[in-house]
Length: 307
Ligand code: INR
Image (cartoon, rainbow, N blue to C red; front, side, top):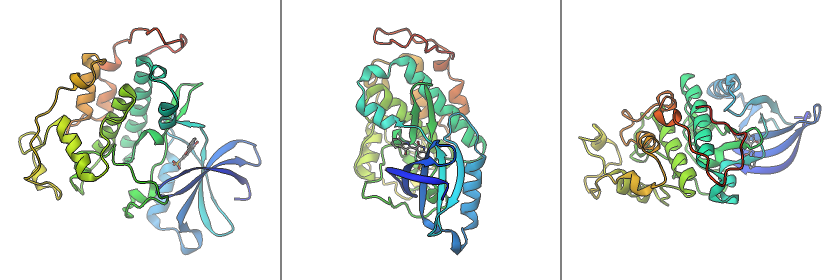
């Protein structure tokens, strides 16, 4: 770690503290993630080595790049990443709705799906996609996915390192219902929630407990049953006492969206994970083939839409 200098804490996640830092040799700003549960001298678990090396092999414009792995004097393992100074959560908090015009939403969504499709092709799922994990370079108009939680991928119980509450807002129904065999569709659900949030500038589902969150999902997407989602009634947390809701028309919630956008959103928010659209299919959706009209508050005239 002598090569790096920690400057300030910028985040806390399930795996440890994240710092803004400096590479002393190149003067390059980096992000440093200190893995709080891994001591190098104990022998790093095989699975962790595998996870970190998988992370190191990920080489895609829409995935934050792992640059180095380093050990400090206390034998704590640190992951060194490229640095970006903004995330989508802060961007949405600090900017009025107009900053996320239709072209920009389409552009961001396309990049997020490219990153997710790349991970899924390599057999990696993220499992915790949310606006705070999407880093932005506004000058280059680039979105990069961060925080592939190592702890989560090897099934250490989810316990945030910080007192901050773990957000359930982007969790898909199959995880909330206790399914243990979930797969890549979990990330597509999260991207659907993020799409909706970019459009509305507020979270689509924002339950404070698993059960209230599930009920919020059911109220809009309909309560699942064996006809809409074969096998759902066998999931551990399924209850025959769930209130029965019919699916709402998403058009009523998103009057600003055109049919193609509504169709893609509803395909990403399909309750049954086996019928949910995949990331590669979503990239081929008609929504990405049609141009968005220029809107009056869009002063970014060099931001051409090439899909
Ligand atoms: C910022 C973060 C900017 N950049 C928080 C942040 C606030 C403002 O976590 C971050 C990262 C960055 C970051 O620039 N590169 C990385 C986070 C992570 C990896 S991870 C890489 O995986 O979430 O710890």
